[in-house]
Length: 220
Length: 180
Image 1 (tube, rainbow over the protein chains, first blue to last red):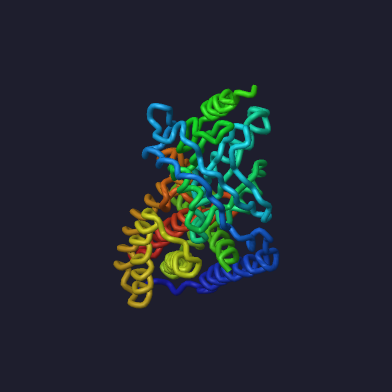
Image 2 (tube, each protein chain N blue to C red):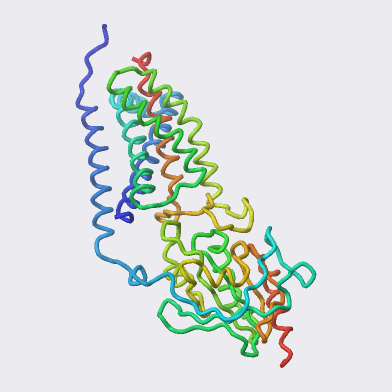
């Protein structure tokens, strides 16, 4: 071995730089995440929901938008839901004469994460019909999955409509036919199903479905 | 705890990315004999005995992180995560054994595993960035396009894994014995 003996100070310098970086990163992470817990972390993500009335027929698989011809639930009455939002205030979805769009949202679903800001934006642009009420049902809650807790997510997205926390076993979601997320049920003023949609919607399509829901309002 | 560690892993990923870019830049400078090639050569000479050490640290941190996320934080690994694990865990073990036994060939095998693994990370990260590419509906399961961790808005778990694979890819060749 004729290799010249090189100065090993460079090696130790590099080793120190990397070690200091790793320790520094750990220190920064520790310091940055001290204290500062969000109140919403402690809000119960699920709660009891009173469900009255028969379950809707299951959403046909594969997503898409249903119609009278394709949807066994079309024309049938959606069960009444009485639950609570993340502030523990009572929220109910029942026949009150006003058409409704009920969004069933799963916090972990990336398509819901895309759809929610779109609904909020469209509403801010004045596209939501005045005679239609929107609701969210936060369902399929699982603390071991992404974007938990749902309360924090919907607050960050500035979701402006009433929210019902579904039960641990997603009973409200099941009662409404359990479609793939994001799942929406469009109801007339008597809580009868007009049609349903499963999956992310283009803004134009969503606006059209809202308008069709509004048009079901016979009082207009 | 999970927040602290995620931030730590994210900072490590940023440091790792800088390291990868630095090594690639240095390699280019040396290859084309650009100004500063003397400095680049001397840094490379200093880095050579440490290259496998750093590669082992990167892969082992990634393995420890993934084990923490699944066992400690309770995140269920998706299919893509499992595929990355298949390549990351043996890389980590091989690099550690390579260090202990001074058998560079083991590091070479880890390099090969990382060369495959990094593409899984890239694919997985792309799926997270463009979730509609995998269909517009979430069924009641655990989609790979979900983001358990999203530090600084872009550092997700596959991002971290990808950086660890990249570090192994650039560091192991530096340690090649015939380079001496």
